Image (cartoon, rainbow, N blue to C red; front, side):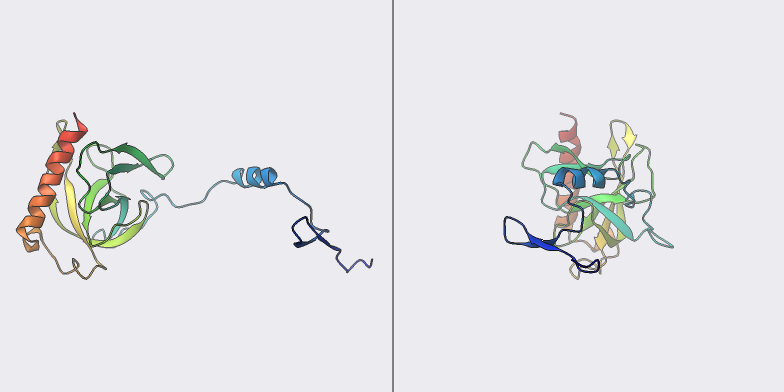
Length: 184
């Protein structure tokens, strides 16, 4: 066979492969990929949030979920913290504002009003419309209320007073129940 010609063989499944390439086992391939260092952006530290006000928010918990996720600060991954043990579910997507830190040493919490659930770890454009002051175990633990900038049902709201009274009462009740659940 000439040097510039490649020998082609068939495997047990009838697929052809080039025999001049080194054969690597599946385990070798997996282990070699694990030895590389990840260069993924950290959602708390590395995301640009906006020039004047934060407009990029990270979702930790999907609307309608009973699973409480939270950011693992070291890795930047979203981890399961617990499953809520009542019929309470998150009324909207819940997450944090990148590059912020609060009294509890966590990023600033935000409830993002929008029509659909968003996968944990996703980020989206949103605008803050209000603040829900809260205390958790004697520490200030305020919640920012925001609207998704790209959701036609919510993007026009500019303040908490724009929300229907029932929606605001539902949000308040969720946080009251949520705080009491965390400490029982």
